[in-house]
Structure formats: C-alpha cells, structure tokens
Amino acid sequence: MGRSWGRYLSGLARRSLTTFSVLVRIMLPVMILVRIGEEFGLSQMLGGWLGPLMGLAGLPAEAGLIWAVCLLTGLYGGVGAYLTLLPDLELTVAQHSVLCAMMLTAHAIPVEQAIVRKAGASFLLTSMLRIGVAFAYGVAAARLLAVTESLSAPLQPVWLAAGFAEPGWAAWAVATAKSLVSIFAILTLLLVLLDFLNMTGLTQRITGLLEPVLRAIGLEPRLAPVTTVGLLMGLAYGGALIIQAMKQQTFGPRARFMALACLSLLHGLIEDTALMLAIGADIRVILFGRLAFTLVFIAALARMLKRGPEVAPQ
Image (cartoon, rainbow, N blue to C red; front, side, top):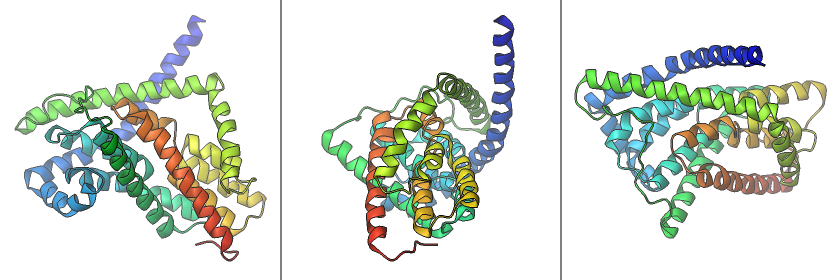
C-alpha cells in the first residue's frame, strides 16, 4: 500500500512539474507583455477600444484585454493576463464569474478551431459562434445577476499574491513568483481531482448522463458518445475522436457541424471549470447557467438547420 502511494505521489509530482513547465512558458511571457503594456499605457488604450463592448456584459474595459489574450493563447494565458491586471480592478464576484464564463466558452481560438476545421467544420464560422455565444451568455448572465442582486460582494482573490499593484519591477517579480506557486498548487489539485473522478468511475457516470441529453437536443446519435467525451475531457481529445469516427463511418455535413459546434462551445467541463472555481468563480454562473444556455442554443441551432437544406456550413 505504501509503495503504491509512493509511486502515485512521485508520478503526480512528475506530471505536475511537466504540465506546469508548459503552462509557465505560456503564462509568463503574457504576464511580462501585459506588464510592459501597462507601463506604456497600451493596456489603457486597448481597454478604451474594448470598453463599450465589455460594458454590455457589466465588465470594466480592462476585462476586454484579458479576454482577448485568452482568445489568442488559451485559458492559462488569460489567467496570466488576469494576474497582472486584477489588482487594479475592483470586481464583484458576479463580474469575475461572468468573465470566467466567457473565457471558458471562447479561448485558444487559433489552436482549437484548427482542430475543428480538421474534423470537418468551418474555422471562421465556429470561431464566430464561440465568441458570439460567449458574449451573449456574458450579457445575459450579467443582466440576470444585476436584477437579482446576486454575487454582488467584492471579489477577494486569496490566490493572488500581494505586490502586483506596487510600483517597480522587483515587487512585481516577487508577486508573480508567488502567484505562479499558487497556480502550481491549483494545477496539482486539479490533477488529483481528475484521477479521483476516473478511479471512482464518476467520469463515466457523468458521460452516461450527458449522452442522452445531446441526442435529445438534436445531435446525431452515433456522434453523441464521442462528443460527450470531448465535453468532459477537452476539444483536442473530442475532435480527435470525431476525426477517427468519420474514418470508420459516413456522416453528413449537418451531423458533423452540429457535433463540432457543440464541442466548440462546451468542452473540458471538468478540468477547465475546476480551474475557474479554484480562482473564485461561482459554479452557478460558470457551469450550470453556461451549460443550460449553451444546450438551449444548440437545440435551437439543430432545429433551424433541420428545416434548411441537407447541407451545413463548411
């Protein structure tokens, strides 16, 4: 028993360090560039351009820069930008959760939509779909939270190291190092969570619950199982499974598009959601509300395409 635990812990340490080294190569350059941008006023300039748009979702202008970085580099790049800008922002839990939900829906567009294109759907159309649905949900969630006065308490990010807001590069470097240590701890806990879900069979149970839902909203029954796996484990994995499925069976363009549209909007529900929960987002906004909003949208899209010709956007 002791040896088994020892092997697991050593393996966990290796996985954590390997994954963290990859993430640092993404996050640290982003954090440095955003810091330089702040020094020269570029963040404020970009924020001025994006401010009116983000204001519709109840967010400050700087949130647009965070989301733009996330769209280009991925969730961890977005978190890196967030770490640098957050000390100067005065966000409520509601605003933080809305921004996290938008980041979860639309991120890493150049990489992930290239996978979607390889699997058989339009890069441009699915990219616009992700950004549009992310923004629409952000606006809807912000309005609902404002009307109900929910999650209006100020955000108090305990995972953010003090020092980011202090002048000077030395204080910033110390705060950056401390916050990266926090990210490493969060990453290790996420790996433990994923291991637990797999060992207890909960991942398979969740997959079993989602699969009939996807069929009910209009996805091709033969593609529902592989799409469900992608929803939980990530777009790269799900996209690869769909590519493999197309080699073995014939699917019409509409079936491919619907599966890949669903996968584009909802994927990595376990790991990505857990990351945002760890940095203080509310689960009702980033998971339950986002899931319901997106499934309703997919059902409406499936019905609309069903009425059209036997083709789907490529």
